Structure formats: C-alpha cells, structure tokens
Image 1 (cartoon, protein in one colour):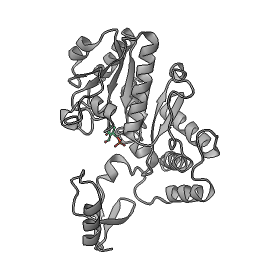
Image 2 (spheres, rainbow, N blue to C red):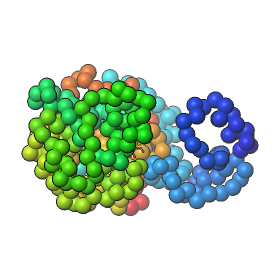
Image 3 (cartoon, rainbow, N blue to C red):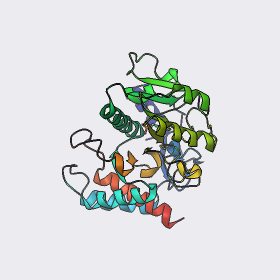
Image 4 (cartoon, helix red, strand yellow):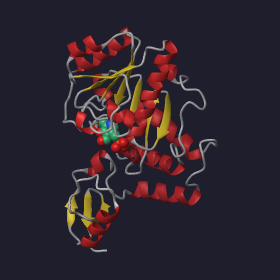
Length: 302
Ligand SMILES: Cc1ncc(COP(=O)(O)O)c(C=O)c1O
C-alpha cells in the first residue's frame, strides 16, 4: 500500500481520536523507522517510551515468534512456564515481592487504585480518598482519567468517580494539608512525564513516604513512563531510594508488546483474595515471552 492509501483508509475507518502526523510507517530496525515511500527516519519517540530495545530486536523477535508457535494464550486458571520465568524476572528487576500483570498502563494503575481502595476499606469504610498531583497523567479509563490531574482529559466524562483530590506536584505543604486518616493512597509519578518533565526533590518523595506512613496510606508510584531503565536506573524510585508500597509499570517492559502491571511488597500481597481482581489477557504467554526477552536483553547488553 502506498502512503496515501494507508492514511486515507485509516482515516475513513478509525475513530478520529488522534492528531496524527501524515506519516505511514511500514517497518523499523534499531533506532530507525521507514515509511511507505521508502524514507528513513531516526526514531526519537520510541513509541512514547515503549520500544526499549529499538525496533525488531532479534532477541525479542525470536522470543515472540517461538512462543507464538508453542503457546500463545491459555488462561490464568492454569500455570505456564513462560509466566513463571517472566514474573521471577520482574520481581528480581523491580526489587518488590509480588506482581500482577495486565495489558496497559491505564489498566496497571486501575488495578493499583483498586488495591489501595480495598486496603482502605479493610481499615474503615471512610478510608477511600486518593491524592494525586496536578499535571499528572495516569491513563484513560474512568478511574485513571480521574486520577490524572489535568481537567482537559476529564471534561465531558462527568460524573467522575468520587474521592480524588489533587495537589501541586513537588509542593510539600500542599501534600501535608491534603493528608488525613481517610486517605488510602497517594499516587505520584516519581518524575512527571506527559504533563511536562517535572523532577521533584528527593525531600519531596521522602516526605511523601513519611506522610503516607503517618496516615497509614499507601504510597503508589506510577513508573509507566519512568520505568525500564529510562532514567538510567531500572526504575526511577531507585534514585531517591524512596520505595513505594505499589509500583506500576507498562510501556517499555514489553519492548513494544502491550503489557502492564504492578508490583507490591509482601505485606500487601493478600489484600486481594481470589476473584477480587483479574483479566483474561494479563500475563498472557506471548506477553510474558516479550517481558522476559526485554528485561534479560537489557541486562545482557548492559
Ligand atoms: C505516567 C503514565 N501513566 C499511565 C499512562 C497510561 O498508559 P497506557 O497508555 O498504556 O494506558 C501513561 C501513558 O502515557 C503514562 O505516561
């Protein structure tokens, strides 16, 4: 298909939700992308922090191809060898104890928020408040768009889920004022991404940790954009040493295959009981092959 046909056909059938460049891509290799007219581009976007191994990395292509030929999907009511390998690799890389796998960043945050709500409700019925930051971005589901501290993404979807409050990012006093016993979690990006690249002081993250401890609220870091070695360490929380109770990830961990999820420390592992949360595709065999290949390749190639 030539570029014009690709663009016209897509425009005709896809919902017009994206402002797209007039660029019709056919393939990629390493940090290069190629369009239908044969032009070569240096890819500085990397799928919005997704293509952590570049395009068509042989290790990722081999892992997905071989897994597809063996077992693409069964169900989480069974165990698979590749899921066992992937979850061990995630735990060893992230420094947490337990993982839940989903398919996107929004779903990862959705699950983390549900876990925090469940945790709060186990303490008392009124402990459901969620504090997030102005200019944050956490996804496009109803819950995560509400967590996102940017009204432009929320307009037209009201009524939004209740219980969210927003504080200016990096402003300790505002966070102190917002906290009380009814807060079940504080959800922050350790470096903001979509709303502008905002790097907080280590003090801010340390104090957020202490405030959460004081009010028995969970500290949740959204590392969907900062994760998978993008800031020079495996995860951005490792710079400050401030460890959240829940950390969400997605984007770069599948190297381009759609995956997401969250990790927790052991003491939170049993807040969800069987049946409380789940999903058909999360932890799918193909996705786990992509995760395992991506993480081990970054490690092996340093
Ligand atoms: C920090 C952060 N959280 C969540 C998301 C949502 O991820 P997804 O688009 O995979 O749902 C994004 C996407 O840009 C993000 O940057």
